Image 1 (spheres, rainbow, N blue to C red):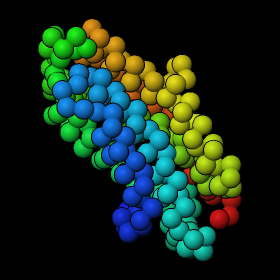
Image 2 (cartoon, helix red, strand yellow; image 1 turned 60 degrees about the vertical axis):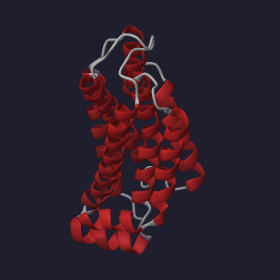
Image 3 (spheres, rainbow, N blue to C red; image 1 turned 180 degrees about the vertical axis):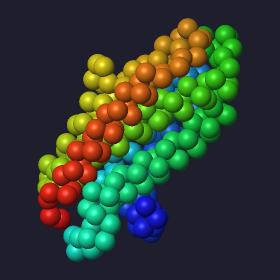
Image 4 (cartoon, helix red, strand yellow; image 1 turned 135 degrees about the vertical axis):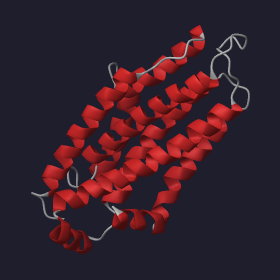
Length: 219
């Protein structure tokens, strides 16, 4: 994981997803907006960023270097490190954004009159952010090498899967974001724990599939 983290830090490919996330938040989140609405927007925006980071980490190395790492640590273990580093980077950035959004937002419901707890709102926003980070990681794991090798197929699949993860009925990401928006309308802070549990299970399954395929497919 230290090796993969160093590759990510030194790679300039990490900048576009982070800059895109910052730009989306700067445009969509304004000072004084209802906190739960803003946190829902922030959580949804991090999902494609997480998927993009997984693709970056999975393709950071040339095939020869990937083979060397796989021979030393095991291909499945090496790929797992890629996914965990991408997950950790997305979660760290999403957490920082959650704190920033909570600080600048109005701690009221959609009516701008009924007060909501800032601490509880931040907690709910953090859970929703983690749900979207996990789903984004799952999307990235299933649309990057070794599941999909051709960029011509992988990139459109990543975009489509990230979109579906946000809008498809029953998706944990949609459920978590919707809970925040609904909570803002009713001025009640939600606790989207069930979407978090489902996101953990889905991401674990996607990770297991990707790592299993890594041991069977040459770079």
